[in-house]
Image 1 (tube, rainbow, N blue to C red):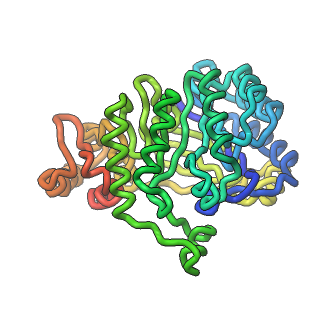
Image 2 (cartoon, helix red, strand yellow; image 1 turned 120 degrees about the vertical axis):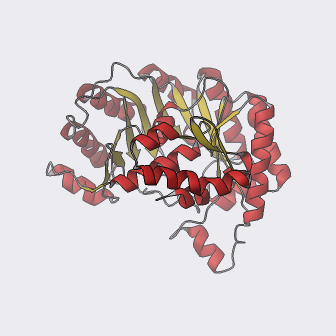
Length: 373
């Protein structure tokens, strides 16, 4: 089973922390959608032996599109790919894009999951991030979605100077009170070439404090589990039955194809990505040329990626799968490297898996890197 990711590279305004590919100008929206439809058709044989299980509209802000535009893209996917076994169709939205009319129309198209980018319920935090919605609109949007969708997720951010522990608690408690079935919550990072990086460099904003992030991450692990959320991936918490299928397939290393400028695709030992430039993407597709680069992953790179993805999830790294694809020396090296983390309480080992403890989750990327070949 495979997944399809559709990148919509438009936003109303630029969040200060974001380094994803997007444009705040909608000038070329019609041309880009036409190119997107053409790319879907040009690549229709890419997964000729794979059934599509999930479709994910990401961005950017897919919710900025009209329902008719989303319908066109969905129809192109259904026409060109084997989509009889689709389990999940997700559309990312911002609160200011949510209306009852729009979410009911999306539901009628077969969209069965909404990903809502709230980030915080405090006005000063939203202004700090340069978000385009208000606290009131965020609450209204969640209540509307909750009324009409069983399956949805809300994004929050933690670990930035304005966010006190009490504010984090209030953000979480709002979602618990509403009955939100899935929460994606990310630590604030200072990405290169973002407004946030510039503001910190010139002293306009305070730098991130790692100890604050660690403390708030620990709070989330402890308190969300108390109210029935499963911490099934480093940044993801779900009530039973509400894990994100599309993202779970990423972490399981399943294949996926990405359409749109800047979108990535993955085919077992091959990674592809489209040019992250709207004008160049459109120009290339108009010539029926795919604006792609690709890399073949070596056996060592595949093993390292298996470690990185495996340790992100609750179940951990499957040892039998790693052993099957590695040499005896490589497998023994993995176990040897893991021993020090087992001894200090960061990793645990069962008969079948190697997985992070709550303490180890604080250092997930570092531990993974130390286990690489």
